[in-house]
Length: 150
Image (cartoon, rainbow, N blue to C red; front, side):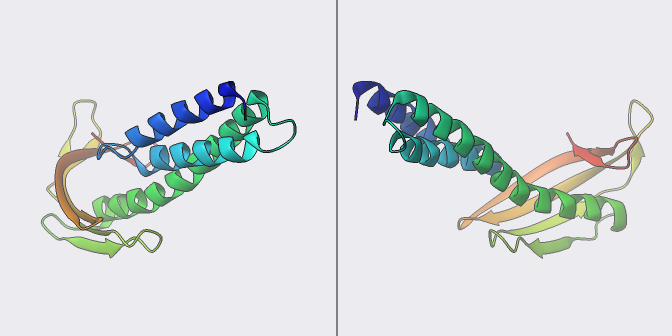
């Protein structure tokens, strides 16, 4: 394996370690793991060149991002459902079937946002990888009916 390929893989590994930080999304973590795996596979395909490693990393990055983002979408849809259907101070709980992570979301009273949209405060408690985290946020309904956390 050439020095160029080793340098590329080392850079991807270092980037991958940064994905272990607690503030990265599942989509980012999936993209990092996908890029690393794709680079390893790509470097062993064809002429074992840096070009195939880069192509493999790009394909892996895209696939990893999509898979990671899908897991996040489930939890976001549950938060949206909570905001849309639950009365104030009523908790909705769920377990993500893909990750096993548990959540409890409690919305507050609706109010009119600065741009006239409906907003609600929400407290989201999560248990991921044995750690409990609590987030206080607000969400506002967009013109298309979706909710965006702020």
